[in-house]
Length: 480
Length: 35
Image (cartoon, rainbow over all chains, first blue to last red; front, side, top):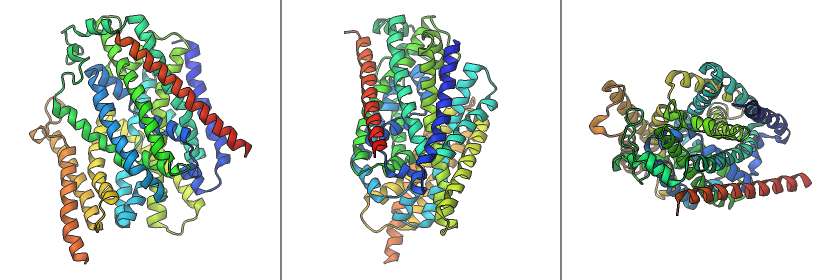
């Protein structure tokens, strides 16, 4: 890496500091601090939504490197339908409710006990741990720094600009991060084609039947489904439902300037994700094809984007690409940190424990919440040390708790029982958790073995749905 | 046709879309400053 590339990365962090420092002037009250005064225009809405949603870039590199084009199906295609559903049927409803968080919605649909439980699950779901760990892995790769040192450095930068700038700081930095991530991946693909060759190169290199990293069979990397089974692919279709309970989506809908922006903004965002997903998928495919052809050295599938960029890109462009990669993750980490802090200050402190708290006190607690959220994330990162594991467990347990009460809340017109909401959250998440623990207790070769090979998300969601429906029928009859 | 052309078209479309969005963003900022 050239000195100029390091300088670009340093410059990027300096800009984040400067934005964090200056946007404080825009904050005049709680609504400014939490939701940028509900003044997000369409371009900012799109930039912040697209960049926030895309924190798992290293995982995308790992999947496209290991499984090929099917990465686009599982991390793109399925999700577009759920985004579309969100845009057409939820976005306006959320905006019009004029609230702050998902637990606010749960209280509106049920009661404040549902809010309490929802806030706790929300806090776990928005832990920035996988993203802080991803940043640690990148800095470890680039600078050879110890993991804990990079985790602490990243935590300090993020704490500074989120504490100072609140949601305004988050969205303004997101615009820069959005541009960097788009430009970075738009530059690497033409250079890869120019260096390695077009489709013929991919086909000839990937058709080699020799296994890569002892388990990757590249011969079907260019087909729609790769070597994966239909059941494995469909699980990802279910995981895409995460979007319906994603606090980042809700927060941006609340913060939009008018009722039309959320729907329009999500539809435009789908276009950006589509173009971006194809480029990231093919960057991973180029990395494995070049590796297979002996033209590239890759240490691990998780860092394949880093390996191909360092090998391929000239100075300056390398700096832009790496900054884009860091920005992709930072934009998610800062948003999630802020959402977690809001769970503590707004959902728990203000709405449950101290209803008469002033705006100033709530903002002060949010700042403490930011530090708690980051500290919890650094602890989780050092504990798990695997990005994909954290997503998987947090996702399975969180989705099992949240999706059913939220969907019924928005779409079921009949009488709704608060008891049904609380019990479905408790039983749904506990089932998923027990399934995970059982899988670990029976693990084979370090991999969890689940009952009948069924992933924890299925029993978790099914239990949550059954409990909700049954309790709702019984309890609403009694409520009469 | 080589698939590579489609990928290059994708990259160009992404850059153009990003530029357009950035222009609208800057316009909004200028409008807000004038207020």
